Length: 447
Image (cartoon, rainbow, N blue to C red; front, side, top):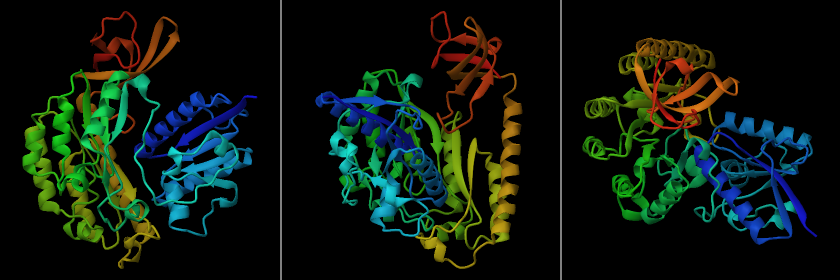
């Protein structure tokens, strides 16, 4: 007799976790093909009355993200779902043996990254729980591309992290970096191309340190050169570049890569050398200036994004003033702002000279005003100019009449940076010869 395996999956926050979720979906569907005794039914809505089991793959290294996961889990449990927790959160609660959580651990089941590759549908229907949380394996087997409609996907080239930033607990959760061999990555790229993926987003916790564990030195450039050799019309961008590993000479080598999108996601966190030192960063304000200047010199057309932490322990008023001036002068294309908070297991929680919460909020609002003002100025400067972008969504009044389109400028990263909203009248031309506009069409438009 065939049994129904009715399930849904929630992926929260992390694109690296999303890759794992896609492999997990691929494994479940692969098992169902090989196990005719089960019929697999996937529901996009985790609260669908027919979805019996819900998998929650989520981040575990930031308390606010854990809180969001816990809220989702409690709602699912209240709705009568069988809930499995996957991802970093599992390692946080089980591997680190963290107690006192608001999560109702009594009713939640845990799947480690290791057991995800071997668990059966029968196990999952019988409320399986992993017993080991230290082993690690890269995902193998099929993968479900969830962004395939928009023709982009994420390529994870390494796991875990060798950095020991004082505000972060990732090394405690995931240990030292493990890189995927170049040949296996190239196989993944070819599989994406076979699935008609046209934009590949290369990710790792620290992309710049790729290969140090396998080859004794950073091998990112060697990897990119090998990717360049693959024949097909596709492009790729890099996320999470740290300036202490990427040299100014290596930036120059990036200009020779024809498929590379000049997008630079550089999580600086601060500009003050004294604050950077307390954060455990290996660069200072002098090198940051040189690094950003080199990008702008080598790539007249570019996009630079960064992350900043406001109110880190020991951040003096003059440090914050320096940060404000830095943001105004550099005029980043995108800035993500974070208010510092003590993460109990992070070394920074034990640092002295804490900035009061009220002062952190005040500084955060000041910086937010600056960032929004710069964004508004950039938007005004774009008015009337021509842009190249991809259609991400088409809203219609009637079947034949387009009301509004959502466009991603070609430099902007999917799911991270801002999209444009335009009318059909603002389209100047289309690179596709089809009569009807559709998702991912490449167009020229005015703002």
